Image (tube, rainbow, N blue to C red; front, side, top):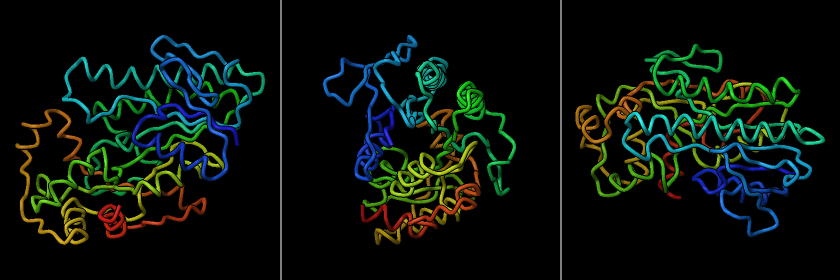
Amino acid sequence: MRVVVSGASGLIGQQLVAHLRGAGHDVVTLVRRPAREPDEVTWDPAHGTLDPRDLGHVDGAVNLSGAGVGDHRWNDAYKRTILSSRLDSTSTLVGALLRLEEAPQVLVNASAIGAYGDGGGTVLTEDAPRGDDFLADVVAQWEGATEPAAAAGIRVATARTGLLANPVGGAFGQLLTLFKLGLGGPLGGGRQWWSTISMPDELAALEFLLTQPVSGPVNLTCPEPATNTAVTAALGAALHRPTLVPVPGFALHAVLGEFAGQVLASQRVVPSVLLEHGFTFRHPDVASVMGWLARA
């Protein structure tokens, strides 16, 4: 396939581009600077600028663009950035795809399990109702921005990624350092459910969504979610480090502000759609996910 990827410089994007090229796909990346390579196309999503003539023939597209939700302390301005960065990039890419002489077969659009809000101990499949907090609203609008593509007959899959286990970047990139020092432990009460996925499974799942007849919301999490206490215990065991230093909720709020509510939220998410379509996880449970993270 010839695949256009936005957000190719991000945590997932860099590795996805390498993964897709390694699997034999022809990948074009969208960049916000002047293009320097034949496989780069310049765009400006903040101003809605992407010339479809620069894309050429496209079989599929993966949109991973969006400001990181944990990159800065939330205030009103950054919350607007979180939303606008997702809506602008999705609308710009979709608009360009619809102006191509031949529409692509598929759009895989990034999304998040934040769609569900705090679900307590309820098992959350793709059919679960949406939450009512800030991130749930962001996801609703983000996924809604793909609707013109679906209406035009493009197969659209929205990839609701869970807590991504990777040794660099993201929540686990920061936690890993603490755990290696023996300073890890449950966050808050530790009873909240965490739904994780390893980077290798994330990349394989995104390629799966490009190539298999799957559409609509798709949870990208390992099949067996676990409580925060179980996740931290599994990571400690994989690193051969104790996990005796709990981090109280008030401390997280003091450091992270409003974003702490997302860290402490309980989301018992299962990837029903991936499993129904025959996707095989390399790391199906918290022990194997944390084991991979410790070795990566």
